[in-house]
Image (tube, rainbow, N blue to C red; front, side, top):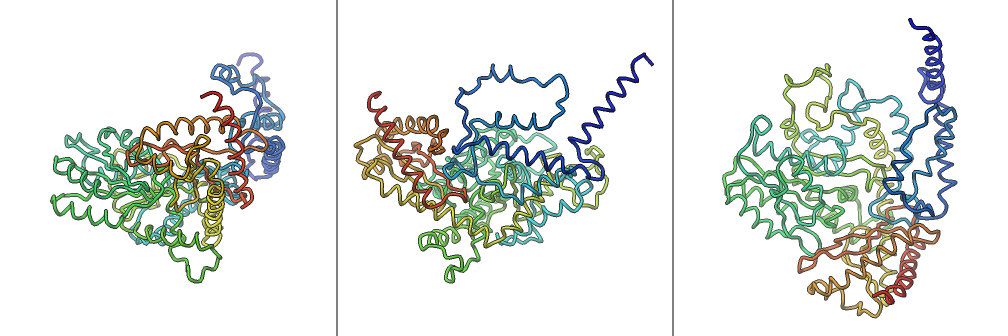
Length: 562
């Protein structure tokens, strides 16, 4: 052994001992106070630096890629004091959102709840992997608990349905389309299929629908887009026409994707009618498979909690306007039982951090279509009698702590608490809409006038525009729309860049297509999404008052620079 090796080994042991004490949980958990201290320090340090702005601000210019690269270095020596590292957290948070700020109303950003955060952190220390019961044990039962609960409230038979937690929107789409592909081409995973396949969906649907088609190797050109109605539902007559055209050209429809209230399509398709039409196609064209019906209910699923609400008794005291909306939503959403599958995003309207999503499948046999051949599997898992999602999941690793934390959030909020949260967002939305209506003389108007959800799309016009009539005119006059879009886009840019990072500012989003007009042109709009339970009726009205103040400031600049 070379001279000096003993000293090197002694240094290594010293470093290891120090790291184990400071940065890792000991075998008996006796040093857990170090973790608790770090959490307390980090959180309080961030809160002390965030100031009263809706976004984290730094008066310096944003760093470009060259600057970022120059800072991408780790220290040459070990940092002995954790607080020195943790105190740099705010430096990495400039320009990011603050979910808890009452004037931060950007697109679909909920406030994470403490039950989830505490559970996720505590369970993560044990590193359970949710692809197999062998590693996660009974923690994995939480997936079954969540799914059985969702099956009950969506009127699926929980003895037949199946489910899986997966990654966000794209992941749930991949599962649905893959199931549809397996129905139409049972052996596609073994050999090349020379027949043509098609996925059909709404034109304004979320881009992840086409992304999933692309990543499955089905080619984006095989995603057939159907025009939408003005309320963003799928045009049923055109859907029927497109489906017939596909089948008459000897192609196969592997999946029909419907709107069940998404961040793009803000209403719910006629699921029952499309279900019966699908069955009619199977008989009429003598198909040896059934096109898979998948509902994008990424936001709409939350209204499943109101299907059994007694609107006559109205225990929670909803206002008449909100109750009318809820009744109409529930009437539409009851039809989700006709879907072959649908998916939910817990990290949107369930007040959970990114990322927690689940796909629900009515017939559990559909997941069996995805099972891997056992002989081809690397022998990593041995308990073949346990619940082992790895046999069919896209993922080879999944967070079990996320699944348990989601379930405990469901148990905590349950029905009334969660209904109260959703009620609050709808009531706040009504306040915002009323304030816009009262200020229509300031050349602003609501785009989604008949919306049943909390988000508000705001169209803003140049001063002295005939606000009472211009919106309806834009729906049929594309040249007028384009002219007004120029103003809207510049104002939105001004708002986002100049008014999101000041103490009396507001943080909003801009949608490039709030709706599609009758000439099938996208209509951009400012988007206000009041999911934050810290928003009061006063702060809701303040948001619009601030918007008008900033618009007047912008109009002075815009009038000189036209």
